[in-house]
Length: 272
Image 1: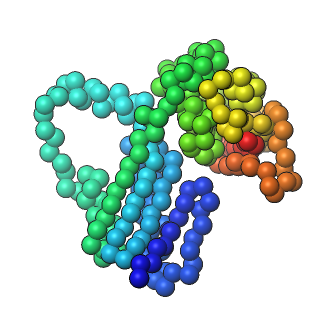
Image 2: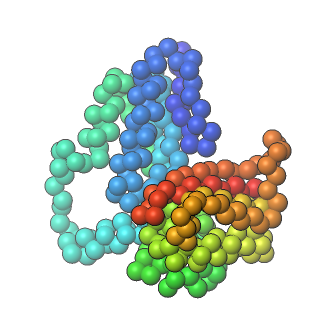
Image 3: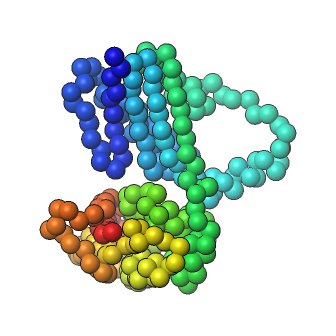
């Protein structure tokens, strides 16, 4: 009789503690964390990952998002030597890493499935969002235009509920990390404009389903903003965000952003 064990899920992050072999369960969770950190260093963001263990079989499903600088680097290498075969390095290639990690499971079959989310970005929505954010190109994204392109793609994916809010918050942290204290006020204005786009402007887009409409957004930033000696908080709310209703579909995420001015706390609530 086959026994299916779900190790982890990004959206609900539940652990099945009824598994007989707890070592395999913890090793599977550690493997997913290690895989996410490894791909992040290569400019590849893991948006969702699941690992299912069945008798003598392992199924790994990963949704990945390639950042623009990774795509440009790949195109540059392809144009230089389109027909040149690259010899893999045994200690640094991706497949040997996975095989070495899976030696502990002692399974006969490993099924890997990687889904590229860059192919599912809606081009119409991409242009719609870029027109509303391009005014911040020189104020926030000077010499970082690739980051603006990636953030617009992430917003387009989130509008269709393809990714979670933690990926949006991850890119907001990357945008804020490279700013000076004089640009903090511009970033706050950027967040207010972003909240307006998600709640008001996207509701007017005809090709978005009503189920994907965002009803409310709330941002909370804690830290020494604008170079002040003491930490303060800034709250940005747009639309309806019920905080005391259990049945409400609220996507919540939080993170810490480490900068030269100190550590900043970011929180986001998105109500659909």
